[in-house]
Structure formats: C-alpha cells, structure tokens
Image 1 (cartoon, helix red, strand yellow):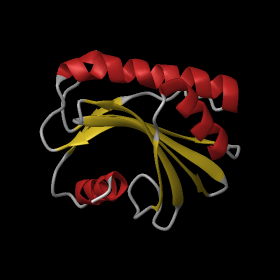
Image 2 (cartoon, rainbow, N blue to C red; image 1 turned 180 degrees about the vertical axis):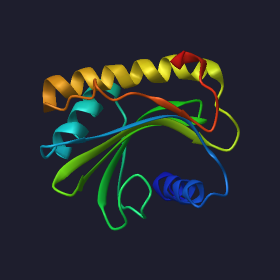
Image 3 (spheres, rainbow, N blue to C red; image 1 turned 90 degrees about the vertical axis):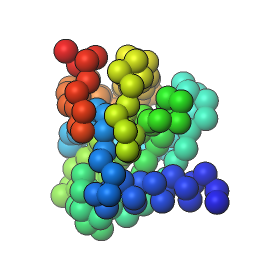
Image 4 (cartoon, rainbow, N blue to C red; image 1 turned 135 degrees about the vertical axis):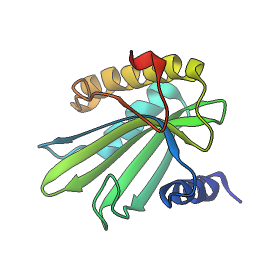
Length: 149
C-alpha cells in the first residue's frame, strides 16, 4: 500500500470515530482566496518533504462536499502529523492547522517541536503567501496538552 493510500485510510479510520483524534487543532475562516500552489511551494522550501492530499470533506471541519487541500509537513516519530488543510466554505477560505495522531495519546514531549514547526509555517506562509495564521488559537483534543499551559 502506498504511503498516500495508507494515510488516507488512516484519516478515514480516524474520522469514523473508531479511534480518538488526539493533539492540538486550530481553525479560522479568512475572507480571501488562498493560493494553494504558494502554500505547497513555501512549505516544501521550509520543511523539505511535504505530503499533499486533495480530498472531498465528509462534514467534519469542512462541510460535506468541500474540496480540501491538505499539506502534511511535519511528522513526529510517526505518531503524529502537523497538517494544514485549506478549502473554500461559503465564499471564504477555511484553514485548519493541527498536530494530531489517532489512537493512544501523543507524548507530551512531541508538542513543543510540533508547535515550533507550526509557528515556523505561520511565519513563512505570512511572508510568502499573505496567509496570516497568527490569530489561530490552538486547543487540545482527546488529551491534555501541557505545552498549551
């Protein structure tokens, strides 16, 4: 099974409610369209390898039927991924930025480097793509996260 197919299967498995989603998430809607080509290029320049998946949402973070581009740009020991998801919703662009895994809780030591990667992504995307992620507040899901205290 290819990495992309495996990742999509894991995402579908996570969304079905079988295994809890754990980590930190943030979301906001911006009034302008976002250049996904710029996001892709900028994240690749900043982080090297980026896994990109384009999918149609099933009604969780994005309404059912929304076309979403997902960029997974940081992985912590295969336990969790930092992802940036972008899709158009009601004339705005919804952006979801998260560090999550499925199954057991992510180790507390995984959060500081993941949050630093998220901050770095925010800085480079603001400068290169005019996408400001600074107002996105992280919240814990599925577990307590000491790095947010």
